[in-house]
Image (cartoon, rainbow, N blue to C red):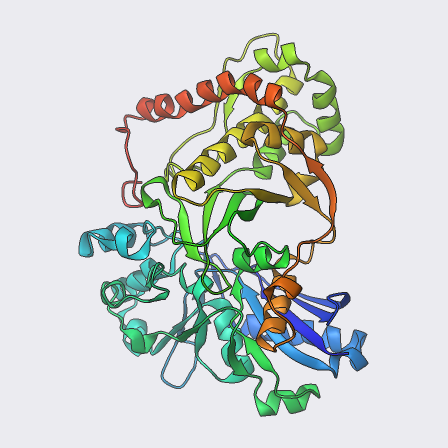
Length: 501
């Protein structure tokens, strides 16, 4: 039976997933990665570490399932987005890769908006330090000798592709996070490139995520004991995760309750709202895009308040909150603004602060924890509203991430958002499974309908109209808090660009 490899180049590890044609998991390999932070705001990794971790994860698969490995028929790639990997004309790496969570290029973001006033129209997104283009402008400003030697700029997974195949290729979903892609046209934009002193010659070629990008090199195929199989274009981590749960049609998506919170919605057309910090990206499958709203503190806010109240057993704490949360208690609870690390969608304000409003002497730890859960739900509701306004509504949605383990929180989210939320079974392989599925499509092992099916559902949180109505006045109070908090900082209400902060 043919097998397929999905490689996910994450920030903390490289995951390798081997599946059969029936998509049953045969073997999983993992290899850890370290992040270097040599200066405040800096976050870097050595590209060679990605490659060595890839080799290690693949070696784990080969040892665990040698017979299945020998039947390898296709490879797909996923990875952390936005990272800037700079190569010289000989394909040698010039400096450590600057990662997605590196914050050094705030001034360069403001510079890009000055250089190119129509940047958001072209790119569909605001310039933020996480994106790739400001990083290259920073290199040009601060490391001119490195910039002058740069012949190619690759994203993390595309550097691994280069080592796998020898080809310089990217795909639409990851490229959309660079600020060099015209997301609507699904092509590099010459004016966006010129704003950072680059041209198309510095960029990899582009394919769709489900298309063949190149083939495994003959030398590596011989070393691995497999054929020179096709390597799919692949996808950025969120787009690949969506493929992994079958979210490839308009209206499908997911809500991720991780450290941060993401609402991801597939659309048949380009959906953009840069003024409200919506990420407007291409999907990893042809002819589709996705909108993505991001809040910076989701499960992180729960961890924070649990530490504040001195409770290490989160499950026990949530059980007490659920028992406490009668309709009367809910109505009288404080309201919480969960901007503990600033906020992305819809405010793009890194200086935004968390706020408890309406605290009284009678409120105990259950009331405070309840307010945090509710505040995160309200923040995600803001993101869903942005997606709807941009033309990327959700009609079906999976709930994923560590926070999804709480049934109480899941029901609250469904009631606040007003949409059903489904808990998938076996979706822990996430982006690696999506990468393997893209590898299947590139190898011709089926079409989207047969390959990109949704997982089985373990539970569905159905919204209750009465509960949603009860949340409405509290949501209105919540939305009044941010303008007041921002005004207290002396900042005029309006759109914040990265340079304002």
